[in-house]
Length: 114
Image (tube, rainbow, N blue to C red; front, side, top):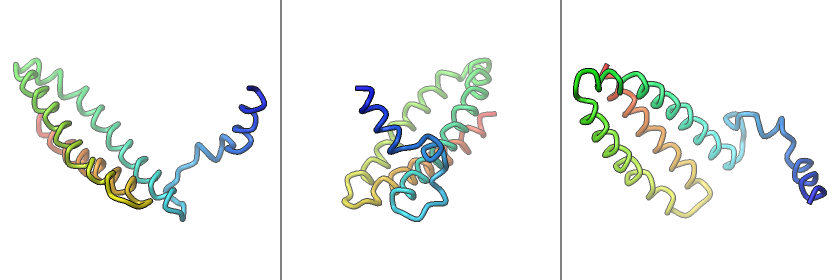
């Protein structure tokens, strides 16, 4: 088992894994780059949520915000998941780009709750 683990580590050195894919030239790089961009937008969504939700609770409309957020998550998933069903190596890139776009739109909407 140790030999297998060492082989995996040798094939995928840690510094290479930690680098951003957004400067790459391959479709795989573009796929990972799109995911990285969505992750940035998603972290921002979570940061905004942690600020906006308590304020909405204090104003008495926290439940309505939570209901809206849950509906948005379902809509986002329904909007973006068809991208994964398309054939081709670019399907993940289109999926993550959709996820990023939908999340950026939601971030803007959540900022209006401030």
